[in-house]
Image (cartoon, rainbow, N blue to C red; front, side, top):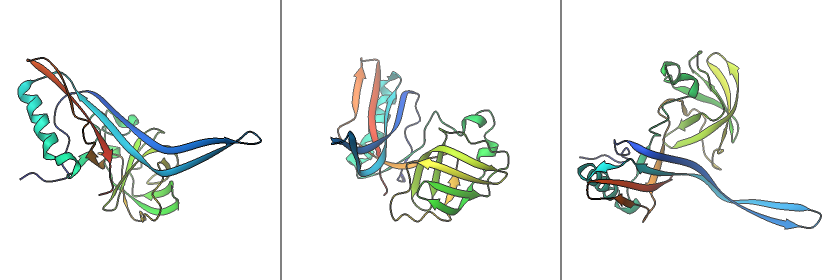
Length: 204
């Protein structure tokens, strides 16, 4: 039987547009001041589009979509074109060691230990913190050497989240997502079709 959350379909993708969306309002006031308010947590959204595929494969993707029941069921999303840190694309071994978040410096800075001493982390790499909940983020800066590093990242942990002791993953980074209802689109002709759809991050 199918287990949920389930992986995205195993097809070739023409586009995987993963983006971090922020809910921010800006308003001007006197003395050239700009008031900025973030009124909801940042959320990851991804738009996926297959290459033109034959109808038999397209119907498999369509059946996968319907198995999610409009968002009642979840997806464990892992970026199909991003296997690990850019410095280790040819050898993922240093990124496959799972670290531990031993100190939460603040909501977007963590001290992690137990990492591979040869791991090279660059701004723009993805990191996932896992403590039963997936929190995926961009690395924005890093310091330290050897098996212990200080990692700055965005988005920050949500208020009240307890990620001290969480696993730290640079390989197979991922997060839980739900389909955006009504986003599934079909294009093409009788021989080849393309499917596109959107997924949105969810905590559960």
